[in-house]
Amino acid sequence: TQLLEQSPQFLSIQEGENLTVYCNSSSVFSSLQWYRQEPGEGPVLLVTVVTGGEVKKLKRLTFQFGDARKDSSLHITAAQPGDTGLYLCAGAFGGYNKLIFGAGTRLAVHP
Amino acid sequence: NAGVTQTPKFRVLKTGQSMTLLCAQDMNHEYMYWYRQDPGMGLRLIHYSVGEGTTAKGEVPDGYNVSRLKKQNFLLGLESAAPSQTSVYFCASSSRNQPQHFGDGTRLSIL
Image (cartoon, rainbow over all chains, first blue to last red; front, side, top):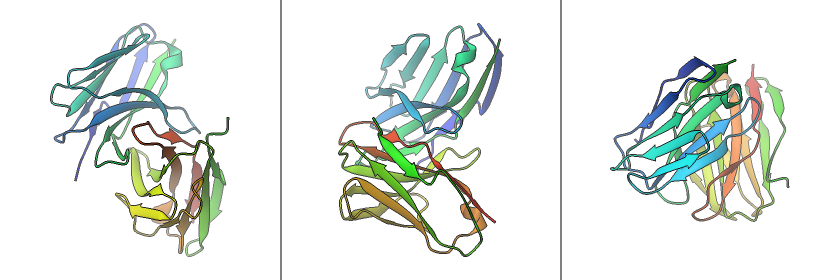
């Protein structure tokens, strides 16, 4: 059984602070995706990382895929209230784009 | 741009009742998926389909049945609802090597 452990589960910070969310597994994934989910809506894809060691940047968000493709991190610089939401990592496995999700990190950024 | 549409958005059932959740996508995607999302557990794959007329079990298939008679529709059925099936259900679709697109979910309560 594949597991994807995501930490921390909750994060409450002030505007302007930096934060990092971690996603770890003992399994190797063909790719890893990060989603953001707002209340009452489905997850929306932020980024897909495919190559071990890959780093992608999306404005103030930096995503990294571990060299062994077993772990990933999401770093947010100078967080803003608009970053508030549920962040989910998901690892692709077994073909047909199947995903296994982490439990999510609920982020609250206070003005 | 409708994307992935789920109906109904909310439903309350009594234990033992049956119902069908409908997912429709207008992106001509080959693959479709049903997930459930419970607090602290992320999204878990119930069943998925890789093409019209085909279905396969995911991580938590017990108590659910699915059908994909048309490429654009994927139905999730509960034959005899149980309180443990109270959850938010998400449908998603994708093409080969493309990320999944999610609907906005169906919130189901079983009393």
